Image (cartoon, rainbow, N blue to C red; front, side, top):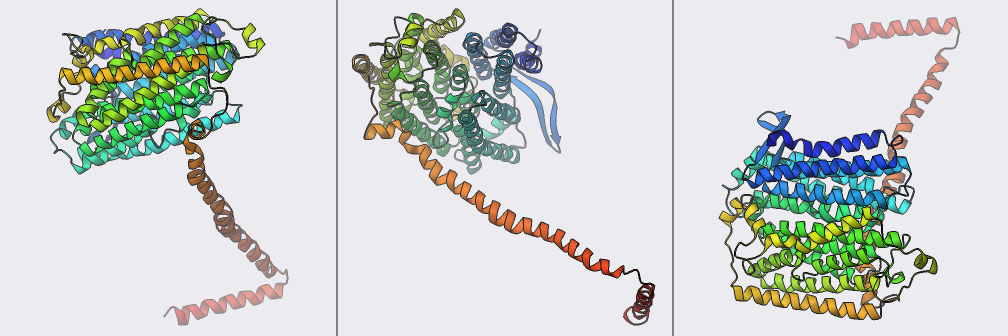
Length: 634
């Protein structure tokens, strides 16, 4: 089969899996539901590998399924674009999602048959929309996938829909994403107005001929970035992401690792030429990303819920990706998406293994000493912690180092703040690791009695992700480490070729790079070892006070939003409900009814039943007609 014929199969398999599990959820045995859900993603992954081998040879394709919208001169096809950037994301999405599906077959086994199949139907639909997002050849198909993953996140976060808090978390995610999506939609309309097309090739070719700093490009890119802020949880629209922990742990891994939250990174990386020609927007992206990285990392320092620590860690790492995009290190940002997918999926699935062993306990203060009872989970979780801390030779070091080096070349202050965030990352991740796995067990006797390693369906994905977290960064080795440097950068070169023509490359000397690496690694290693020693011996078991209390309560941002936005909106809604709707609109509508009733009651007296009255009225009517005819009409 040709590339054009294979392309359609990648999103088709998850769609079929969704339909089969969704329509027949009450009739399929659980083992078959899990097999269908996992098998659909595996099939997509295999096809993606075949497409990757084609793309690696230099072959790219735009496969048009049909003409989607044609209005006047505007023609928007339903088309997929398979090139270096999309195939990389396709491999990440299908590969990591397959491991999460396999893991879920064991993690969710306590669910009844119908709900078990519903869960896998939602997962398959999520992957389908995410593939649409990254495979679309124009902004409209991207937007369809963009909205679809928002819908699926709502369904998955609120999977246990009988819990009101979980439903509220799902609604919060949905609504906050809508705010960002509104910006994306306005950008799409502006692109149509400016370029007369939504197809990437046409838009980027026309944009590359525009001048640097063009106002239209600045407006379009800032609106697109608003969409990315919502989807990828940046300040100020990040608060939905930690609450998304309400969903099952594999869902958290799916949303936070390889898929939904990286959509904003993909969109900006795809639109790289637009941002390169809009330096103001790039600065906004960099500053927002840096602020988010530091802010979220500070909150993670004092969280005690194992999933909340990882959630704020995700927000922080996404901030680093946006920093990379903002300083023009597009390859570095995409590289960090890939490595983050490996170690963050591993961290969440490892956390799920711990929660599974602890009978749904999530507070790390009630854990401790788990390394002996959960050896595989312990070792793989440790590898992920080393990777995210940016310690060589694991994957996170190479991608984070590339972003920080580009930040230093752009602005020294960016680097200083970024390195501070890296030190904080090492601290809170090894605080989490030490409190959970080291020391003595602090749970209940019943929990201790039932502690056991997770089944193979859960540990095998952990091992695979641990290997990827260890070695995944080696495809992006800098010149300092290898003569044949950065295979990923060479692979993605065609995607960022237009931007490269307009960018002034800032090359750091090798001595400068070694200095930056030494400071970053030494600091991260020192903070990791101090946290390991301190919290392994004496974990924080009490309630924090002072600044720690503010961090524990997430800087009270949710409370601030509640007071400044939510309560006033509810107050306005109550005013319109009581005063405007009931007091004015209902009064007017009901008044019409009352007027008709009153008029009917008065007119009925005309029907008296007296013949004399009827004759009199008839004569009066004739007289009126005569008056109109002879006097008024003239």
